[in-house]
Amino acid sequence: HQGGASALEFALLAVPLLLIIVGTIEYGRALWTQQAMQSLAIATARCVGVSQSECSSSGSYSSSRTSSHVIAEAAKLGVALESTDISVNANTSCRSVSGFATVTITYEFVSAAPAFITALVIGPTLTASACFPNQA
Image (cartoon, rainbow, N blue to C red; front, side, top):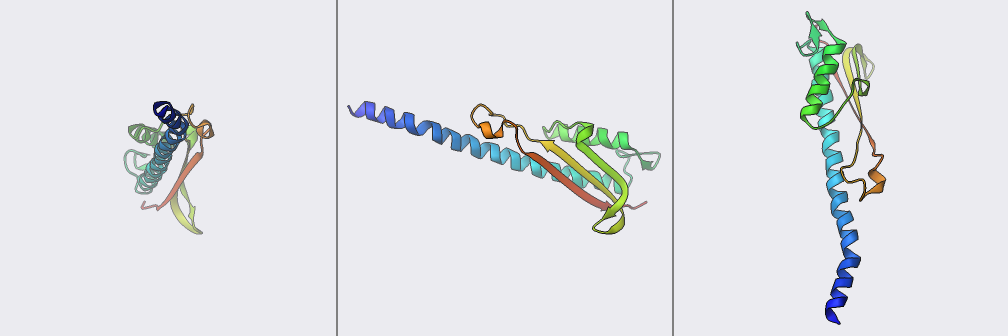
């Protein structure tokens, strides 16, 4: 029976094809999330380095304002960060040169389809960091 053979072939190929499609989408999401976090780290390091109002209080660095700012900006991108995921040092060295603000953001990527891709249930830990020279 020709119809039965086609149905069997489809059943055998549908699962691997679905895994490839979902895997490609999830890989793209992880790559996008990494890039979004890197952009956020760069913007935050600049925010601290130039003492923008979002990262400072009365012209000096504010840890709480900076963390709140990063969490709010990450939420706009669909990334749920907590203050423990953010490390900011307002006056440190970067590549052996002192006088920099550094930011490191760590995020554990969670797959939207863990039932399909069990390797992504735990997810990779994504890390982004940036330096910006202090202007003050």
